[in-house]
Image 1 (tube, one colour):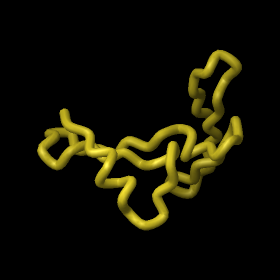
Image 2 (cartoon, rainbow, N blue to C red):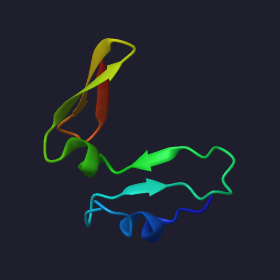
Image 3 (cartoon, rainbow, N blue to C red):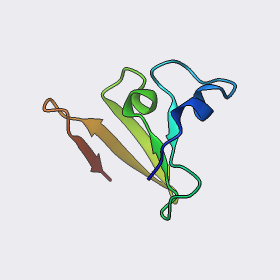
Length: 69
């Protein structure tokens, strides 16, 4: 599986250390990978709205991720 970090860093709006990393075009699964630092932006908890419901994603003291409805 190839990851092309440089391709994303060169895109407008990309910031050092918080870039979105895309899986290479030849990958069978082809899903996006987002660095948690970019997602949380210094916070320990964020809200995610999915299908009209709000979920809480938080980082624990041990550095694990927990998703609650």
